Length: 505
Image (tube, rainbow, N blue to C red; front, side, top):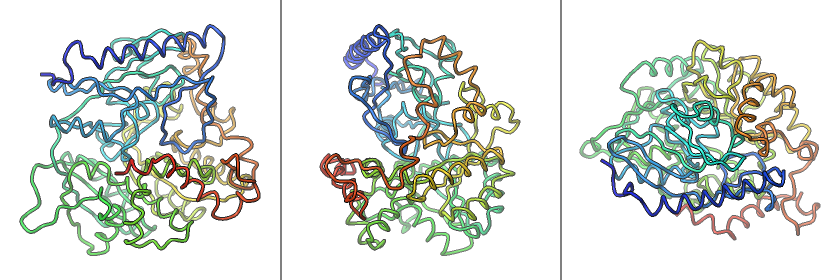
């Protein structure tokens, strides 16, 4: 039966309908005036730079409420800006959890649906978008419609990974599964890329696994981790391992230590929420680059003292305010298993960036914006490889290496996630993606007032040419901004002034 959130008619649903009516009227006004607009969500977990003008946006930042949870159907009704931590915490109160939970607590339900999001359970359930049962969307005509497998199926599928270019998503129902309080996580040391890939493929076939991912610390050392939802607590005398408190280890450092202790597999019992958001503190391992930039010792004491600034909500804000997003390589690439080792060898030789994240995913061909190659794939199981780290500060050089990177991905039949910056020309982009199907949907659902997907992911021409990090301050002269560590300090100051660092608490 439904819990009290689903009482009828709920006050929250009435309030939701009123907000949607306001958004619909604003969208109709843009249409009447023949003006284009963008959607402003109020937060981002993308590294792409976005500039908004107040008179050219639809503001959906207030749509952040959970409206209902149906325990019988195992489904939860939420507005698009509900973040993962709220979604998980409310679901767990009723013994349920989303099948796919993105690793950063600030990633929103709407962002997961529209932005190609997966996690360590995606080998079983696919991307997060596939757990969305139906959506409510304000079309660019101002009409409010619902889309599901039985109603406007083309829009329901097409809006997946469309990055908000088909309409304004205002409500989503997400499938849930039975939860358990702990995750039993096993660490399997591996000593080559080939061994890591082989181990992951074998673990996918094990039906007892609920979670699988891996970390390569070098080409010759790594760990594959397999998890199962369990009821039991640790054995008497054993320690319950946690990752969300200031005194807890960063997960990747803990995994590396566990791997170094023995060449045999070992096991932790982890509270389910700590597991789901295990990579939040330190943003996987990218937080280490902040320590290197500011020349702060990367030791436990400093990580503990600076913990409030090392959660991803805060890190994303500081990164955008500092302008450093334009000089970081942040790419997730899905590779056919048979080409994964070759791809890692390329990354090793050309970037030397470690660690690398390995996450098996099951892809579906049924989005209007899947690359053409995806429709031709016989094996939908791929290995996502996360490549994250600093690149050249010179804009031309940074663009050059990213374009070569993208070319190598194509040569190896890989698929690039578009949440990060893309360096394809428009012609190159539409050679990869099915423009005809995408434009047909945009025409059918009157989306011409919204930017196209290429408009959203294309690089900023000025940033590509600039030999320094963009000045995000209106008061600091350029010659001062270019001095170390002015841009970094500015990003931290803006984050502190906005009190975003308190979100971590």
